[in-house]
Length: 361
Ligand code: ADP
Ligand code: MG
Image 1 (cartoon, rainbow, N blue to C red):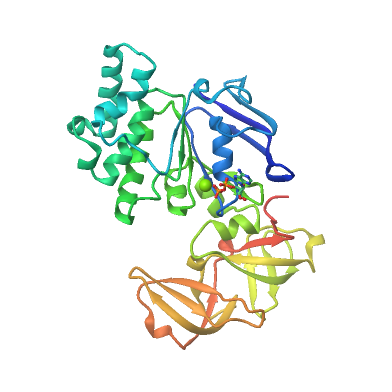
Image 2 (spheres, rainbow, N blue to C red; image 1 turned 45 degrees about the vertical axis):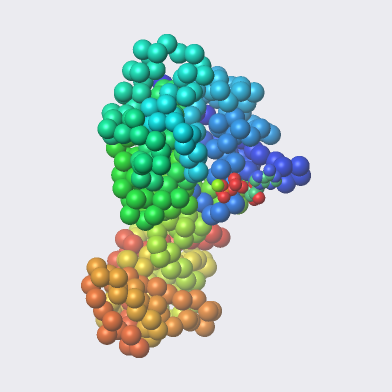
């Protein structure tokens, strides 16, 4: 059991509030991912949960017990850092046993904890090696093993994969997903700026921006139903295209006349009072298709990037200096310098007013 509840949590450094009004209810067994731009307060929030940073406002509890003033060691939390400092002169086994020895646990208990952690992390064959005889990924697993042996209720990870090279990052990401599956009752919070890690690992993602929470939801909720323009553009790569327009027909299907001269239909419902409303229309690059009918975007392709399974098209910037990006299936370098007409299924067309999605009101 480990349910974490944050209510109105804030962090101020002197006069500067870096986090405010953080409300979060994290259930036992969840893997919550904090994402957001650099400097938005991800590490600060994690460190407040760990007890390494004072909470300057609001309440934080674990299983109903207020934690604000409880020292880190008594919170039942283990934190795995980005830079994993293993003791170089100690074997894997001794590295993992260290905290338990300090805590004067009986040897039999230590051995059992290490055996179990080594099995989960597939480190059993390496228990008697020194860290220098391990790969980067194996060392990272030993660092995780040091927290598993303490059997914490909550695991906190702050960008644990960012020191690894690309291939190892993918492999270790999959290992962390498997690790979570073997520990269904432990709660994990994982900080990353890597979208793919967030999308693949999270049971729910918390998007942090501007000192607050921009949206909380499952990865696909954030992708399919972003609450605001920030989340719409932060989740998904390349970012969602946004373009201004005016609502000209309302109902279950909304018709938008675009400032760029195009027309679009959206399944986001609108009411009669919305007629004439200024909106921003959003379409993901992967949802744009070539069309001979009404175009949302029409323009000359300036650059093509053939990635193999898809080709990215960068249209010439429009009058407002905006560059539309489309992601078409297959290899399409012949489209360079051609004029393309791009549309989208009404189900894939998002609508925002004053920065907020019209789906949420
Ligand atoms: P992230 O992990 O999302 O990149 P951080 O949590 O490290 O961001 O930092 C959030 C903000 O808090 C940043 O603007 C940073 O400059 C500020 N900050 C962090 N630590 C301190 C500190 N000790 N004193 C003042 N400001 C700090
Ligand atoms: Mg950080």
